[in-house]
Image 1 (spheres, rainbow, N blue to C red):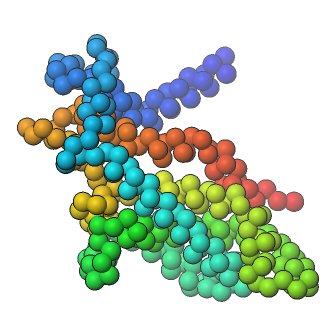
Image 2: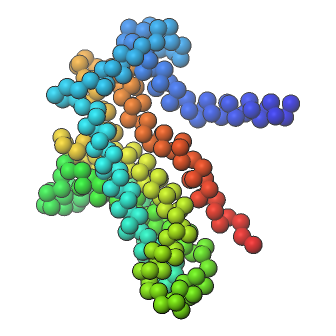
Image 3: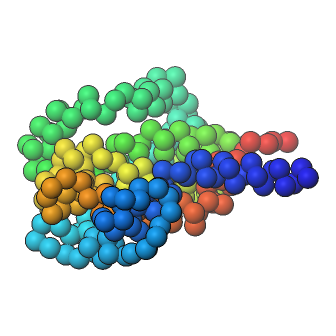
Length: 273
């Protein structure tokens, strides 16, 4: 009885939390005619026409180009954030450098609305020639990912005993060798978690994609909006839902495949002794 009730609670929770996704998926499988008379969750005549329309390439719409732009920029934003955060996290965790000032300042900076940085970033990128480029978008996504990567890596390195560093120094290892040879393999799960979260966060970023790109580096979050009224005359909800599903698939699949890795890293170090 208790087990049955538990499953009922699980199913209800899954349905409630994923209701927007379910509605979007159902809508994407309906034709425009059926949506006008049947806006509910039941599908009378499922169709893939909306997805076929999304996957077709035209002079103005190219979902493949948008996906590639998001893939490149998100990869840059995730990997570069780790490369910058790892040595900084080691300095903070081991030398206590900046723990009282630098770390809180960086973390709290992420709580500030990103729109505040819109004008200075746009002017800076215009001066540097980085507007509407994949590397430029990747750089700004790196800044977005830095606070989370820094917090996760600082905590992961701080959990390691300082005796590891001291023993390595006795053997003649330098700071760079200690970081790359001793520390990095031990915090590899945390690094992978930062990469996954960073990629998903960068993929879902909309503001800077809208602000810094116009044609050549448009990410899928921005490019998806171009499909909403592709033929004019208002929003085509079936087409809009299909392109949203296509754009959400990569981070969703990545999160599902790496779920155990993420959960194991986040709970590591929670129990000591």
